[in-house]
Length: 466
Image 1 (tube, helix red, strand yellow):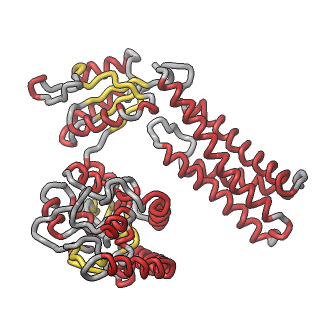
Image 2 (spheres, one colour):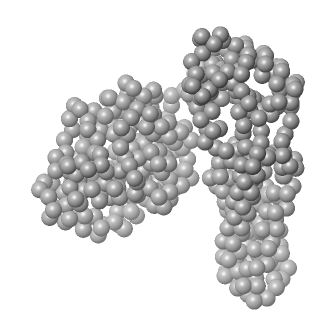
Image 3 (cartoon, one colour):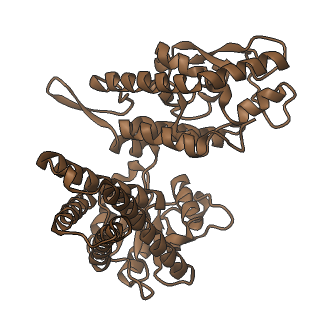
């Protein structure tokens, strides 16, 4: 069934991954001792290495780091690798604190060890990922894929398969029981046969993986297919539409003795409200202290280069759809909230010279940290859109208003993933909304700090910002 000399088998590679990881931890410790201490390490350092190795392996198991990453992203791999090593570092520091033995170890050696191990764990995975990419581009280590059900979800899956050759997934065929005249397909997509043909292909060893993309109304048919495929060795995936995706990520609630599924909900309840608010106050105070002088310089530049106020307020929708006033540095000669929204675009004559720079670098949004202190905005959250913009897109983009389940933010998950600036098509807005809803669904304090970090690294300047 599998093709090539490298098998996507977790049992084969799990031991290799663990051994290489342990070698990285131990060799980095040894090199840190030689580089910083100029000598070999004593038995106490060996004990630290053992503690770090055990903590790392346990956390790696917890985060499923040793599973198959064929259809996982490189960003996920590096994230969970780094997170697992951070757990190892915390285990070491906890041991040193509890035993009051920190003074027995060189801080320089520990620092070099911590940093070099993290780098080594990530770098060898990068190298191996690149090796697999080259192997799969040559046609080895591939997996043949069959898709059951032809619809928009299936087309989205095909798009991802075609644009991700590094996964080694090769489309064998699409299977659907409907008559050809009832199936609408793009010109380059062809139906390979009926669903029974897909099951036959699996039994004959022609298909390694099956992706089921049938609607939820076909529950009985899906159960029959799963029952048939359970007697094979093929990997089976269910491709959820947006409704199913929301259900599997929903929260179970109780109304008396009856359990319900909360499909549209907010993560900001109870203690999380206080945690999020404390995060906003602390971050905004720190950032405002750091940017006070740059904000003064920007204010002078705006005032001296164009007529009008330095700061203006725009009406936006806040949490629960309530209207708020958002502060920004003025970047245009004319800025109004009208019934029809015209977004800023390239070569927009309304944008001043200083304003163009402020918009490209997002510096025009710095006064919004005052909004954060006031409590109408958050540091991280879905970006607020103009009221007329909201009214236009809420009719065109499904689940658009769910963005307002939490406070709007200065930066967000959509922005650090490239969906910022002008949204001149419904498709672009749909992608932005999808990322916003992913953020709301998966909110955590760690995710907020991750977004803030990504904003500083890559989020200030964008090619689609005018």
